[in-house]
Image 1 (cartoon, rainbow, N blue to C red):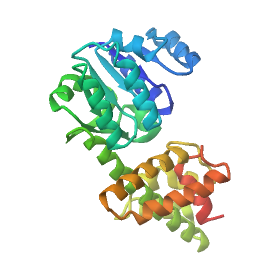
Image 2 (image 1 turned 120 degrees about the vertical axis):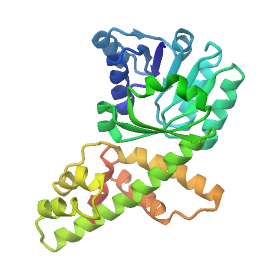
Image 3 (image 1 turned 120 degrees about the horizontal axis):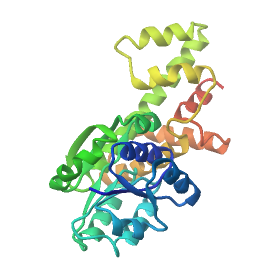
Length: 284
């Protein structure tokens, strides 16, 4: 199977490297051409001038971009050139409605569309250990599973189109709650003048242990917020969750609070920092 990658951002680049090293990647497209050209020189894959050129040359198109409108623009552009029988996999975080629209556009071309958002951050993308939640045609997923296994350590089929994005929304809401809990608790610990390194170490071995505490606890308490997952992107994702919650008449108060907190931080210029920058508000 020849695979093409659209989007070489913080997440997409790590995925593309793993695909290249596994021997699947035939070519890439990136809006900023210089980044794609650098990738070509390093890995010897083709660089395409447009998404449509890429789609015409491969069997599997992987997409990793930032927003709903970007996904729909790319799907529209590739729909005129993509070969029947191809599979398009969108690993962006967008709404379930956007996934359904994309699938409908490609179905007219006899092309399967899988909504397959991922979790695991930049580290997971680099290490090939992402968790992937997939909606769409299960047979299409099985056909291209070897490709996805090059970038993911856990691939879960969730159901019909949109189910992957629905599951990712659950993940993003949960991540917001964990962020609130960890930043609040560590600020509380610091206010008590407790030794934070020891607090993090002992709690990481108990019932309140979680990935965020283990991987971001030390850095946030030291005032370091290098992005693993940019705050502004989580804000964007939570706004999607907010819309979905209104449609489903669901209450997501912690996510709502996090949206407001992130907006405060973005206004102060911290949008490109890691989501652990929420600690700035808990411990000014």
